[in-house]
Image (cartoon, rainbow, N blue to C red):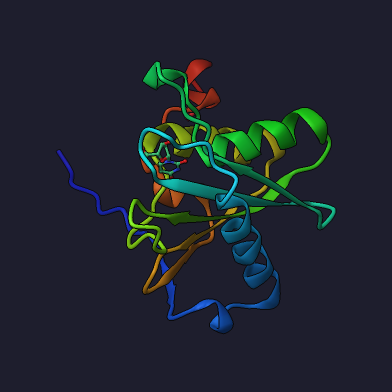
Length: 163
Ligand code: THU
């Protein structure tokens, strides 16, 4: 038996002004698109903005449904649109922001497990790490790689026995 420690690095910024220009632009895009969320059930409006390899930005918001599992998170709504419309473009970064049930900038935001798995797939698909920028009310967290959000993940390599 051996015990291993898995560390992740998270850079924490006080606000969007502290970010590098590219990240700040992505955060502002995520904040803006959050307003388009269709969230009549949770009243939690999430926006996601992706940076593609060519520098362009693709955005998405959460889209809910009376039949709960049918709804989709902002991250996957943006990611799948990007993959469908720009399949030749790697996703290099994602920013996520949300407006909570009180209409305020959400306090703690982090992608759900399904979105983490979906983002990890894009990272493997394009062989390019995706920078993750989580825009919460009192801090902005930046991670350099989706694997930081999903250690010990299941991925395509697991299917064919590659370590
Ligand atoms: N949601 C997202 O779109 N992204 C996240 O990172 C967290 C949760 C959505 C799903 C649902 O529509 C609402 O927020 C409440 O969970």
